[in-house]
Length: 173
Image (cartoon, rainbow, N blue to C red; front, side, top):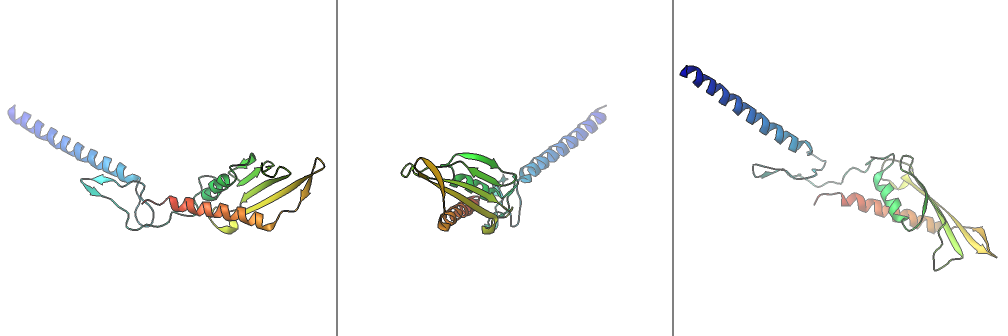
């Protein structure tokens, strides 16, 4: 009977030891599941037995982040650039932002309306198109006026610069 108890205790200890080791391996795999190696980034360094898993090099995150229908950096930068204007349409799947007429309080006799189209999933300068409409108040009536090409170019430059900054900000330091 004592031999049976000893064998049973040894079997239980082996089973417990195997279960414990399996559990530790499972927890370690779950912890490492969020990490990637190579040229992609590790979101959070993980400590395992006082060793730190680190990235070997800092690289830019991919330029075609698309959890929506278009490039997420360009989308966010576009929304930031026109945040002072009221939006009449915003479609993240098709990449279209349309603002309402905006009159600068310093110049109430002039107003502008913007349409921003994001055309690609990559962060590229040709993936963005900004069009503007301008009107002037004459005798109480809004009359269409030409928009300087430099105005549209400035908006595009602001959006592209913000998008690049957002992409750089995603680096882990």
